[in-house]
Length: 197
Image (cartoon, rainbow, N blue to C red):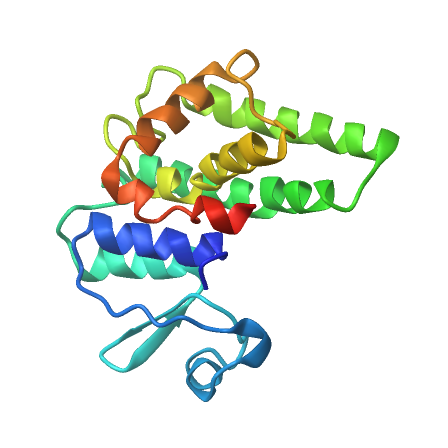
């Protein structure tokens, strides 16, 4: 599904690891028997089918790929760094994404409070980028893939005029977005701008 940032994560990881794959588009309101067979619990995308065995949930899929195909590692090899990458990835999925989702359902003072909460969460990620080119260090990695939602948030803000991210408030995140947006492999996996309008 083109609008799923979770599917885009998996697609980016597949491309970074140079794993050949077949992309199958899903119409989620009309789930196919194949999707229901491969992901009967959550009934959603993404699902990776490898050797006729399904693996669901984007972060689980990426970790599975990294363990199965050792070329171009995505997760850090150091156990502590790997744990921290997982920790911040979980922070993005469990804290930041629900707050971003809440933004579209609020107005007035509640919207202002939600934006303030988002800014507090972005500050945590800003601090994590200090002294690094990428969240993964000197090259794109696991946390960068999960954090790609920030690039989409930036693009959506450019289109809608509702800018949550600014270079003044979050210079390191802004520089990171500019850096990853220059990467061809990342651009291939972004939600098409015309779909955001």
